[in-house]
Structure formats: structure tokens, C-alpha cells
Length: 139
Image (cartoon, rainbow, N blue to C red; front, side):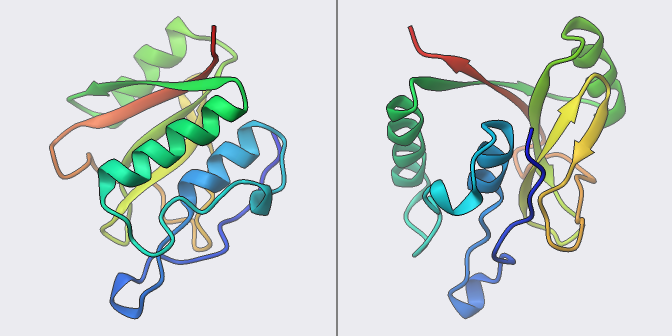
């Protein structure tokens, strides 16, 4: 894993969109952040951004596998981490700044926050769920 920070804070009122997802992908894949497209640039609709992410991951022979979890963040990390020891994975939720954010975890801990100001994950996404994702080799 190559620890890096985002290039952009999420400030949609100013036309600036955070790039935590591409930065997390770059960290996990030992790539330079700017070698990964900024999927949120220009604020495309969520379904368009998700499709661009899927296409780019496919070009790297990868897929993202995600599962939504309801409950206490630390309990979710403990359970997932105990079942997947040594695996780096992504946790998406709400950051201290109030927006959706993704961080890198390993075992039961958040091990890297790409946020410029270490905003972390303090709560679930707007739908009430945390999302845990892993990158897997495309078959």
C-alpha cells in the first residue's frame, strides 16, 4: 500500500469535488494518485461516476466488491477484520466534514485516511449503512 493524500477537499458549492475514491484506489494499487482518473470531477450523476469507476477498474483487470452493514462502526470493523486478517479493505461512511468519505482499513483498524485534514469516518452513509469494499481480480 502506498499512502497518499487527496488533491482536493470536497467543496461542491465552489465546483470542487473530493477525490478520496481515486486516492484510495491508488494507495491500494501502489500507483500515483494522478494516474487514477478523478471520477467525481465535474460532479457527474452518481450512476455515471460509478460506471466510470467500474470501467477503469476493469481496465486494471479488477472489480470492486461491496457489502452494506448496519450497526456500530467499530463492531463492524472488528467482525470484518477478524474474518479477513491481513486484508486491506475500504470503509465508506460519513466524515467529520459531513460528506461521504472512504478510508483504508486492515484487520479491525482504519490504517489510512486519504483526507487532507484526516476527516475520518464518524458515522454511516446517508442511507444508514456503512459500506465495506474490496478490490478483486476480475475473472
